[in-house]
Image 1: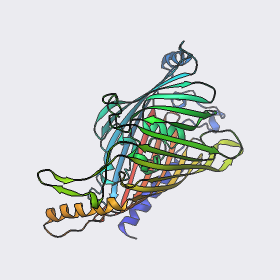
Image 2: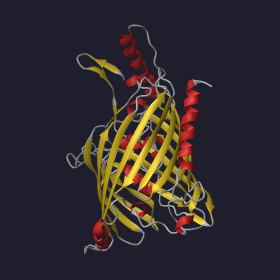
Image 3: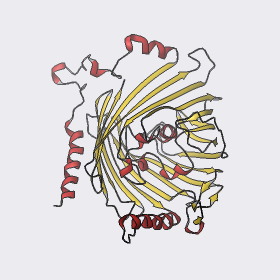
Image 4: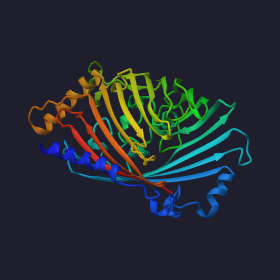
Length: 445
């Protein structure tokens, strides 16, 4: 067995054993007669009800949630940074205001999300498919920012209008329940359709018309600013590069209540009028006194589909189920270096009887880069590497494939520990396939 295979077996064993052997701290045992202990570990939040303050605020339509997530990840094989482990932490602060309960008008909901990012991550070592989606926000440095401030006004039981600054990770999670990198998959390609990155940014002011079915968003259509404003107000300048448009619709099928685990097929698309750089050999030119110059295009588009199928559900326990999810994206391939993407994932809720709150997932992704991008970036990197190495060096840009497996052990209602394993193929031909592993600890205060 090679060194890489030995590491892979050891990490995989630790991943699965963390789920199999760790029992929930609040689980009842035979000595207590089946009654859960009345202690801090039985709370839904680490700090409890704040002496009744949390409940009183909720009764008046004000709901606070605070989360802290710690990440400890390392590229244990296949990189110049091998065994260079990184530690980072994220703080998420949520405020929801129910207008009617606060004495305002009926149907109004205001949602605020602020984020603090500190520490380091392995994203720079994992190419075009970052291994830690959550640490991309608000940006790659240590910072605190207001990433979401939206108002939703329901105009009927099924139709609402949403406006404000929206966190794209939050929106995708609200619609498709893929997680934000803190409670499911961690790799960006499995958290959201990564091909949308060219037209859908991490912070955007918007005005959308939403169609609900029950509590689920069934469809939306609207306009937004395509520029990234995760760490700014988004207002200066607003729509300076023109608007972008997005729409999608879910077609539900199967019987039962509509919820996060419902079976559906969805289709959607985005279109941006922003000016983008075209990465193509024919557009490449050298301008004396300025250096390399690339042509521009005044549009970018993408078409996407998200599929969700409930493959199995425990008829005696609704908390236990197995779902399949696939995410697919096609782009223009000019303004966007990614031509198309495809993912396939299985997620099991309550994978082991008696561990209803645990989650297990396995997923595969493929990111096909555009030939224009590969034929432009590859030669440029080859020239740069030749100059540095002082000998002819050829570097090719490769499409990216990856695999991820995780197990979330819900140790208490407010504390979850995740073991995570990722295998990511090289983006540059000069690199090797990367083996990334780590732990994630999420606390709700």
